Length: 70
Figure 1 (cartoon, one colour):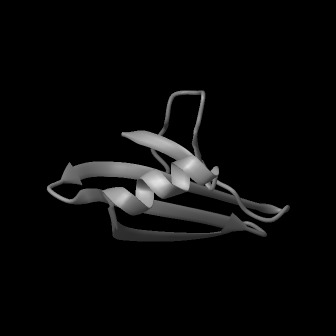
Figure 2 (tube, helix red, strand yellow; figure 1 turned 30 degrees about the vertical axis):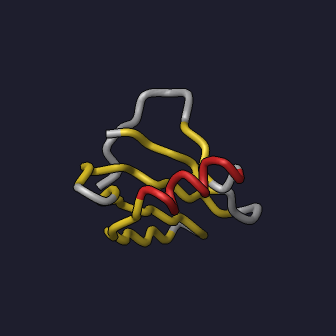
């Protein structure tokens, strides 16, 4: 599983984990942490949207090994 940071406002921490790949994209888990509260959403992301997020810098791969959040 790869983990990516999501560009967000100061005081928030947001991650996107790629759970697995399917024909037209990725099944992802988005983890948002703010003020000690954690929100987890699992959803599909098509390849073209993922590539656009990487190219624009909205998502960037974490340097360290990913660990399980859930």
